[in-house]
Structures are given as C-alpha cells and as structure tokens.
Amino acid sequence: MERERIEWRLALVEAQLAAADRAQEVTAAVLAAEDREGASRAVAELLAISQEGGRTVLDTAWGRLTQEERRLLAEEAARMRRQLGSA
View 1 (tube, helix red, strand yellow):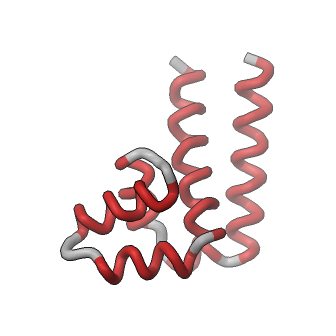
View 2: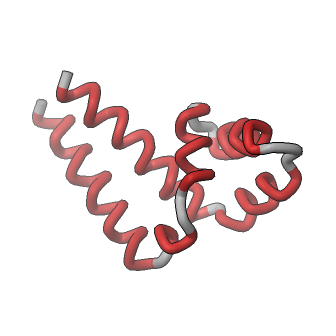
C-alpha cells in the first residue's frame, strides 16, 4: 500500500517537473483548449502523462514553477525514487 502511494505521488511530482521544463508548450496547449477538460487532455498528451497528471499540472500554481520550488520537487522525487529502490 505504501509503495503504491509513493508511486502515485512520484508520478504527480514528475508531471509537475515535466510541465515546468516545457512551460511554454504547456501554456500554449492550455490556451488553445476549449475547456478545462480539453486542457487537461492536451497537457497529458503533450507530456505523455496520465489524465490525473494533466489535472495536477493544471492545478499547479505558477509559484510552484520557480527555480527554488522546482529544486524542492526534484528533491522530493529523488527521495521517493530512493524509497522505491529500497522497498
């Protein structure tokens, strides 16, 4: 159960990091979408992530995309990968 929770959280953190790396493309996809659901699908397709990941990206505040916040997300992802590697 704990492993599944870590894998789920890791996928969402990685989605946020991928979105930050491709912020201009993500922004263009969101702006071109007809509605929120379409934006979620477009982001998920663009980043090759799950629908839930697409929704997470849409819910991410711009403040989470600063260099400092991205470092924190990367550290969290690395920590979870280590946990999964030792589990």
